[in-house]
Image 1 (cartoon, rainbow, N blue to C red):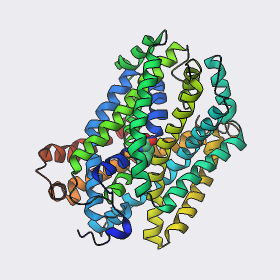
Image 2: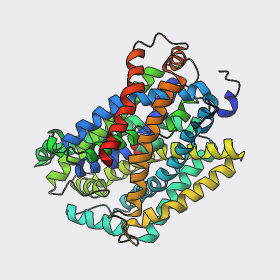
Image 3: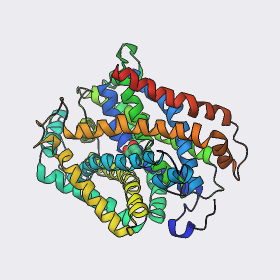
Image 4: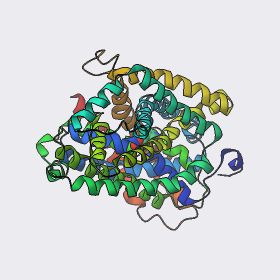
Length: 449
Ligand code: TRP
């Protein structure tokens, strides 16, 4: 494939830049906000184990498949599938990705807004609580405040729009270089604090000791959905990032770095949250508010807690932004490719409608809290449909496409271009042809029967 179109599309400046940008997409609210609360809701250690199996057996092979599809075609999802399979239904997988990016960003932007609000609240020293109960009540009243939530939601979306509008490469690559390592140092410091709180070991036990009685088909479905969500898989985001890769870069080791980094951050976050939850006498089943009520309580018990709180929420907001832009980019590139729009029109329009669709998610904790359908709010439904159904389905179809339609041999040729041999080719082909599709299918079947 020629790189003649390279100048207009843009390329990652270095492999480090690519790995960090892909990690920037992967590491986000999924690791820091979602992972701890769904571990809490789904039984602790047993869930963590199932999650790890999903990451390495299903997620890792599919990430390599997405990178390879992107680099081969140098196109975003709709174009990539259309190029490799001009006839037939496969282009639908690309469209599904666009829909999924739309749905995920609509509620992701709400939570991104919460992180921005907490930066401001930390700066004005409102994040200083005598007890975790107080922190929880403060959070509860914040997320039910229609005006405030919608304002910060809009602000987060405006930041995403601003970055994607200008094009991301230089800025994002450079920002991630500094920010990702800083995030790690902060998590280590927080972990030190959390683990030394009295009563912390109870939380470590909940987090690490599996109770296999708690594994149900639904728990496995949620673990698998979370693996796709956290690795940014199943909707072509990684495919799009792979399309900005020059041919000489090593796809396999890049994949392994991104997967390990993402998993490490999520696991470490659990080591911060659960010791703190139990030490503070809170319930791990708290749901989406878990991180926002527990951590501020921990900060308040630390020396320089106010400062730590500011820095932590800044990092969280940045992690959310680097993921948010990857979601927006998929939708935007579709408007550009399919409708022939220019970038600015595409960015402003998609940013606007995604924000509008997200407003009811933002109100799901206040004004619309009682407007439940089958026991779940609007926010829960959008998250559930996109994360637990569309992403695994998209991932399964991507695996089937690479495994059976495009073919592992063709993929291997792309992977080995300019590279040493792909030693794990046979294992990967097996995983992508049989294991990933069968695993997703089984989980779906078990869930419905
Ligand atoms: N992976 C990100 C997180 O963990 C969210 C995200 C960004 C995402 N891009 C994606 C999820 C694409 C699914 C698909 O927060």
